[in-house]
Image 1 (cartoon, helix red, strand yellow):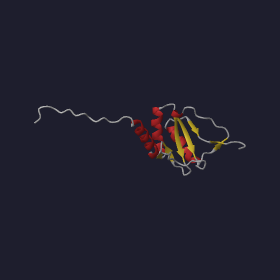
Image 2 (cartoon, rainbow, N blue to C red):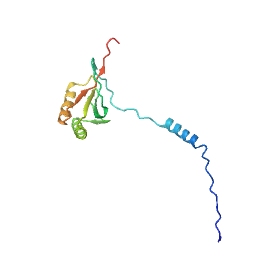
Image 3 (cartoon, rainbow, N blue to C red):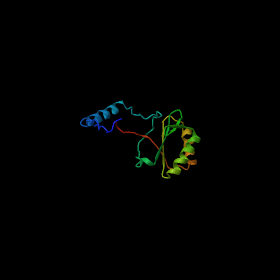
Image 4 (spheres, rainbow, N blue to C red):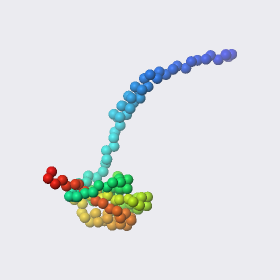
Length: 138
């Protein structure tokens, strides 16, 4: 058994190349990361001659309706009862909520009317319709 301790010097890690290593790691992760593209319904919006832009985006809930009548809110496909439940929660959380209906131009009006009735039942009275701006002469 030893009577005295031998002091060992720990090897130093060279810090001169840490900036290069960090830069290479950033480049690696930027190149290998798959950016999530928005997966949603394909919607062909109707055209309008006059539109108005919504200023506060945080108070807007987007309701997508494709030409088959499928309804999507926050990437969740819902039926009419689901629309009522989701919008009840959203309106309770934010009373200033505006429901923006983004419906395909080929959707039956009966389906849009069902959504409007569901929004009325959920106390979501602020409703707007998204349209494509019709450019005159171009």
